Image 1 (spheres, one colour):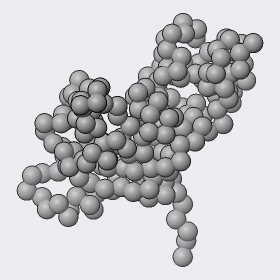
Image 2 (image 1 turned 90 degrees about the vertical axis):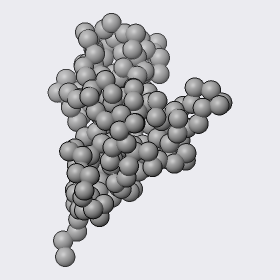
Image 3 (image 1 turned 180 degrees about the horizontal axis):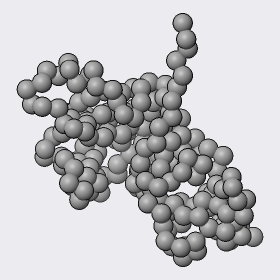
Image 4 (image 1 turned 60 degrees about the vertical axis):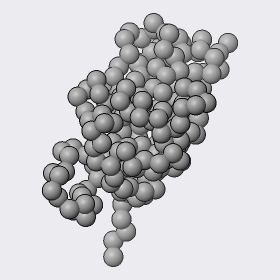
Length: 200
């Protein structure tokens, strides 16, 4: 019997969610099914759909907003993570969620265009489920890495606010639509070979 080869696939995260990953607060993510199942389909049929993000044991490499800057410029940034370009050792990738005030290197590049080599975070999938968005529990919402605005806001309410902020502007299903989603649990945030600039 052939041993299953674990695959790697890209996944996009916003800057706040990248921070949550790096801080160890985010161990789950939810993504809408595309297309959404028909209302009259049996729930059991949904589980036969192959998750586009992979299955248990597969890895996800995170795409985030970044730019390429001269390595010499990056040396001036204390504690800034960077990855050296494999084709040009004098150029490095830096990340907007940590260095958003830098004018060096031109405009920020949207996460969708990040190449594999520039990705600094790798995740290993632990579990994949299909569920309605509003079925998320308080604990699961906390593991999504969201932050309540105040002590009276629950993690679930914070997740709802964050979900709508991320999805409604792009015409995707908001919280009130209660879409079917992939619920993906992962582990092992890895700062994959990223070098921190030490400054001078």
